[in-house]
Image 1 (cartoon, rainbow, N blue to C red):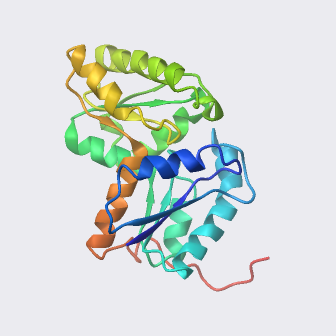
Image 2 (image 1 turned 90 degrees about the vertical axis):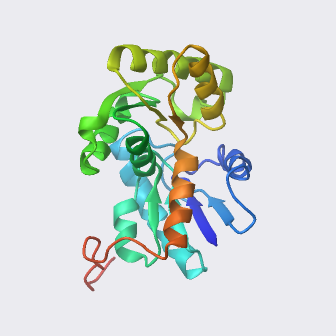
Length: 238
């Protein structure tokens, strides 16, 4: 099984960390290739960034299928390019935001997403609406840390924990989702810290969720429906 993981950013700050993090998730039967963009934004923190990321992401998704990949992941919580990629690929395409919310909806009656900036809050709310899960979305909170500054793990984890407590106590969240795929390597420790505070709730890592959902779809030999995601009509593209 071979999965292509696409980081919708032109900087490589998260590439090596993502590769190392995914080694904790995969089994020997799964090969993961991680790549970022040749052109596009440095990070996705709004609809404009997402629009700029999509063209090259689609090119790399198509390239992945041609090179024998069995599935593609758009590794960004905003799920850039997921829907158009589903129209042109014959392998499953999974977005980290969708996968996270679907898992959380199985585990709890309500969930909150803790993300980076207020800019992305409407994007996350829109994803929950499209999935039919808006009624389960207790809140979208943010730590006010730009994506490229998430390399400061201590600062990030402390800010996440503070917002998670508020999500539980004020918003009645019963599950929590890390709202950015740059929030690597902290889900387990945050879940344990919350349990020490008396809150036995799941904390969903979006990268882990996207990978396991993609693995499952490949193993089941299913992909996105051709009736929902129809092949684009033939026309001039310039």
